[in-house]
Image (cartoon, rainbow, N blue to C red):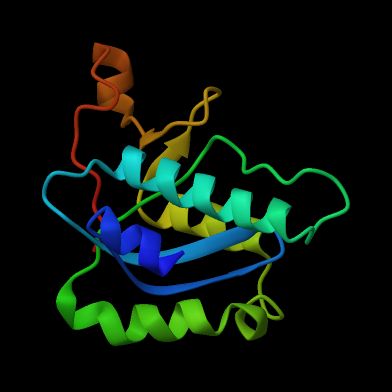
Length: 137
């Protein structure tokens, strides 16, 4: 998978997952949109999983994904987090961690699956929901 990604100028630094989710630490070429990168990675990995019969039925990824940027100074911590998914999720479920993340950064998930900033009371009253930047730390 890493070889095919490199051909597309996608640099997979670290990849790992646990049961119902997968984390990828990527570096992208400037010409690539994150949606295209996710499409390529999901396509390549599901093809490989199905070719090697790793699931009882045909494997398909869900349509949704979530991506954030990280600063270079955080790379060692993010790599460790990704590599230690199994141990990490013995302490907290993916769903609880996901919900905590959304709450911590003032985000909400809409019915269509998109994630947007939680509107403030004044934004909701004025109809300006979603106009603020997402604080990613």
